[in-house]
Length: 129
Image 1: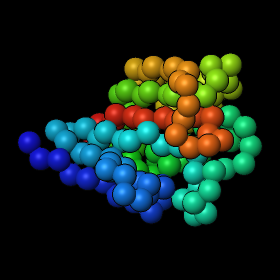
Image 2: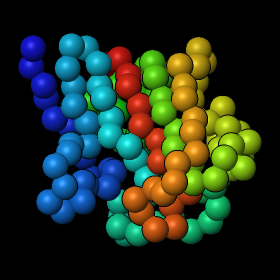
Image 3: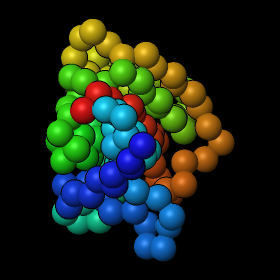
């Protein structure tokens, strides 16, 4: 089995020195690392609330998936990490707008802390290539 790393400037680069890839392609699947709401053009957290941050996460995911030869239409599994489960409904509205049917399997959980101060959401995905 081969593992091919994916890298695009259309999404934030891994944190300097952090041991992970934006994504890995293996066996016809692309495994995308959790994306936080950082604008790759500025390197800064996007302003706004959960909706703006969720859209930025999906923009980052779409850029990585495109680089891997995939897309949001090929998602098979998503995991959404929320800073506050009270943001679920607003995140879910963005999710329904950005993720085409048939919807992939999904988990959504509240976590103690997203490792980016001010981030309200992080999303990771697995998709077909």
